[in-house]
Image (cartoon, rainbow, N blue to C red; front, side, top):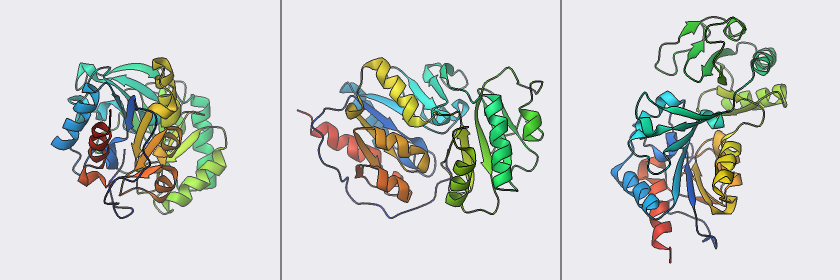
Length: 295
């Protein structure tokens, strides 16, 4: 879930030591990573993903996007058809196609924690405005900007949107989006993390000051770890790709990890290797080389 923009210059070739453990699973972010800036999957990348699956390597899309935004890759799922959405808040079966995605696992943000997060971040950063992402609904405060090109299901203060009698109150909250019009994005992230402590997990995937707040311990990495454990796949058998702070934990957890050429500095520091940027098919470049080196 990212508005793309260059962050660092591209590394021309993938850089990482060869792994002694054959990979069994590829975990890739979407925006700024697998997708080009025009939000398409290139033919080269489509072919690389299919070749990986044909070689017996599972592919997981691991994204901050909600399930309803997964149409861009629904045609490119193979095998299990699962994707991790909402920064780990949901595991979704994409086999149903656009508009028919099925939630397999939900790791919700309890409304009590959500209300605490709203209060604590607003106290630490006055001027913060919110949107609420649920399994099917999207709700926002009136002052929240039109960042997502969609019509909210309801407009109201966050406290009312999270109340027990609010519209959609029987539907799990996946994450809160917190926006600040003036703060530097990384400064806002640090302020929110200090304010929230263990009340919730907070990260970001946008170049603007837009934070994504999930349940305690919920991240791309922790949900990916659960999915891998169910399959008997160890961290060292996973190759991960990403470009923004919400990818850092996943890249640190995986046995091999690649920062895109356009990645945030924190991602470059966390990953074990680098590839070229998303517009140069950096994920496909690594997959092609990986498959060519298989015995």
